[in-house]
Amino acid sequence: MTTAPTSAPVTVRGVARAVRWAPAPLWEPGRRARFVAYLGGSMIAWTAVGLGLAALLAQVLPLLG
Image (cartoon, rainbow, N blue to C red; front, side, top):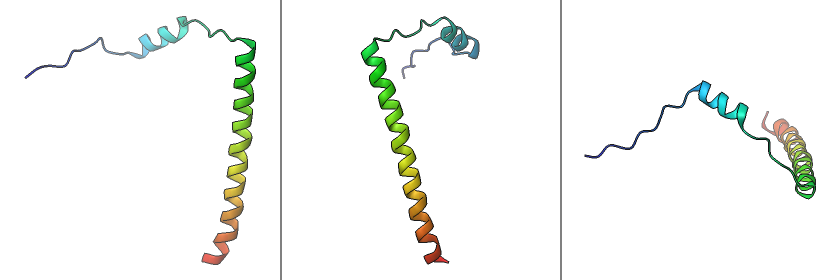
């Protein structure tokens, strides 16, 4: 029987320290613009999907009751 290698336990303090001292990402202007466009487009798309599903549900619920 073999034992799995163990690593140091992960603590909240260790995670907070790693996040606090992690360097900020460097954005190239083109990549940043693409990311902002992707983020905005995905928010608009998911909003449209949600509104469409709500409208569909509003049409179906009266048929069930």
